[in-house]
Length: 79
View 1 (cartoon, one colour):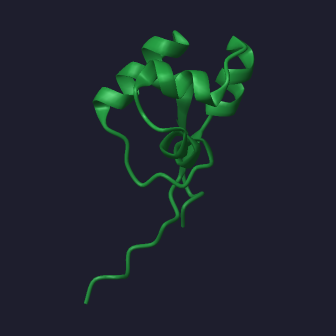
View 2 (view 1 turned 60 degrees about the horizontal axis):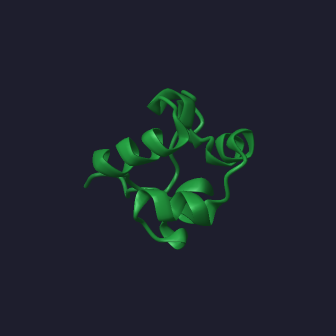
């Protein structure tokens, strides 16, 4: 039997830092990207299980950043 899937992962989301650096609120970003504040909050707090490339593209466009500015991988963190 395969091991049970856990909610832990080794990805850190840097949305708070990027919003602060750009002087933008989560609500403003949600309006620009076309997603709900709740969904962005889930992403910001590291509780998202997935993100669509279209959403990631819109976030990067709105924040003038690269995906690597928004997300980082930390090996061993999610174990």
